[in-house]
Length: 83
Image (cartoon, rainbow, N blue to C red; front, side, top):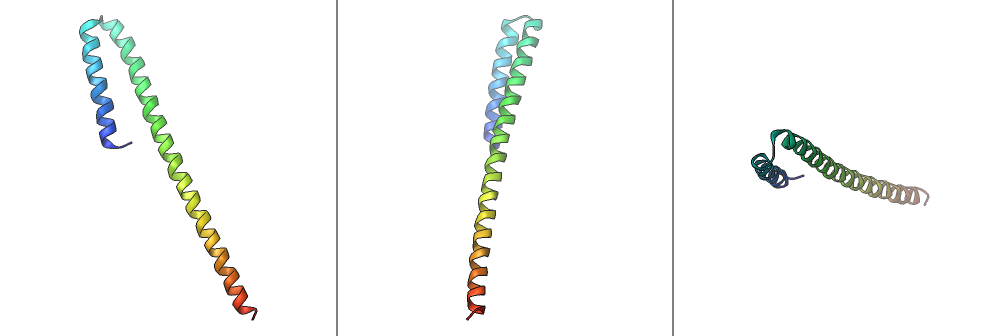
């Protein structure tokens, strides 16, 4: 998650909490705040997990390409040695 996304999420959260504080009783606000914080944390975790998965998939593709290159070079060397 980039810095701008984090700023947007937390600035949105700030505006929501200010509105709720002025509208509801403290007890109600505390309940709503807990739900909102949990929701935001789950969202952040999901985004980070998706980014981690994308990075792992890219690494796996890179390893596959390296393995294919190695196998092609090995066949070429074996072919030249067999002449």
